[in-house]
Image 1 (spheres, rainbow, N blue to C red):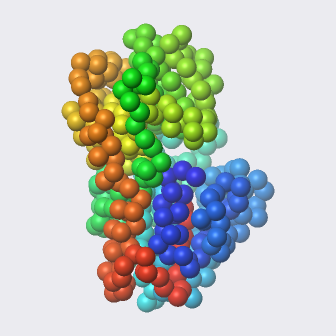
Image 2: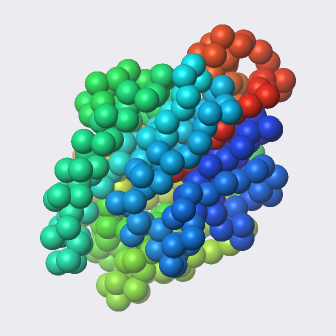
Image 3: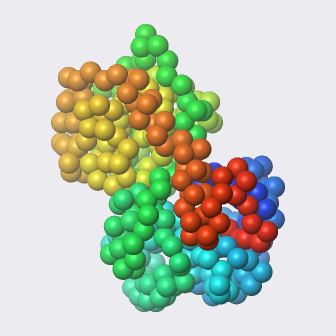
Length: 367
């Protein structure tokens, strides 16, 4: 249940009769809201180790998507950070794509993925990426309307597909978080997220090693063991934690450290909903959520020195928890539902209140 699944959950609330199509379905990993819907999978779900290794089947996903029969539907919504928009709706069905990002591993982050991969993967990536880029651009024409989760992603859609996109920020359950009295705020900083290379958790660990300040890191991923090896005495790597532990640390940290470039980035909004400011890399979705000088500070380059300078600047500043909470409230789930429901209503010619916006036949296609 990450950001893409949270978007799907909100779509399920807007469209309670929707059928869901996805490559792989693991009932233990999703919410009851999603499981209440009819969920249908492609042939990839039946392949060996599909639930654990579904990314390995990327070359087969275009063919699997094109085999989905959508002839009974008048509205198709694809939730896209992979090739989901490649489904083939039957005319005159309306196809709206909610795009988290064009496929990062073949577009804006191709070189990072390539250099971080093993020898065999690097040998396969150039021809596979070329094939996928050609197919990805062609299938953009199967979409009637694009909705981007941020202006950053809207720019990528324009660059790669030559299509315009309306920006509707994704839903964040801001009401699940609460600030605490200032007397309960502790002396440590916090980093939250999947510990993978492009999120640059190494910058945070190295910066706090050098500063000798306290940092708590929450999250799992391929860099977890490496970060534990390089962490100094002031850095605590907790690994994956339950939601209650996450909420506790959000509300009690000095500030959230956000060193990666994200398409949108729900984590900074959750921190602000907890009344805490954010120290973020000044590119990507964080620039659309964090208000410099009011709810956080930015650093300009992904280097340890630049991050340290931002931390020192933060320590000389004062921030009002109320400003952070108010800013986070602009990204509430109900705001997303109202905006997205109204957009689809206009796209389909059926303008209705979100609470009653429902069609007899529709599909939601997952990533």
